[in-house]
Length: 201
Image (tube, rainbow, N blue to C red; front, side, top):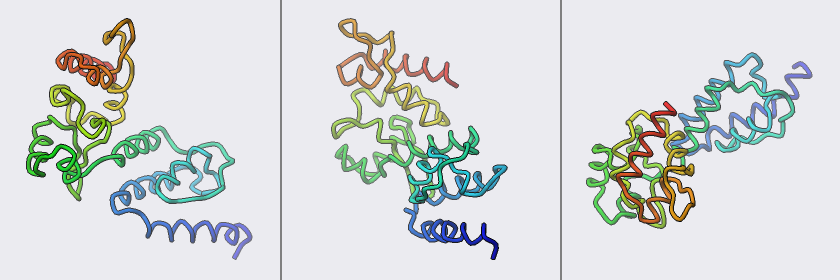
């Protein structure tokens, strides 16, 4: 065994061992991340940066090798951001308990686009950012219907939480989320959300 192979063996063994400890919902994400790392010009874990290490740590892979220039491409970084938002989500059962309705009703609302959801092999995933203080955002069903089904969750989250000069209360700019929480017009919030997403897409 070469000196380099001897040095990397412990890291490789740790990564392989940690893969078996992933939450089932994270396996697809981990697979895509590792595949994209393998596609880079230098797939060795010696080249991971702090940002890449942090990304791997979110999936349970830990390492201290974070000194070289990043090799994660923009697509991979976007994937990680999207998966981060998707990971912070609730199941249909959890949403049903939160809203005090049946799981069938929750699934129906997902199909009707009055709750934002993504369909995975293990069922519907409902991003947590559409819920606040133990309930869905006021008027969210009106706003959610204006979100195209394929819109990246990161864009939705940004449009929902970024202050807008078009949503002001007492001269204070509000995000769509804080506007709804403050009792602002649901229809106005829906229009602003639609406009923000149209500009971003």
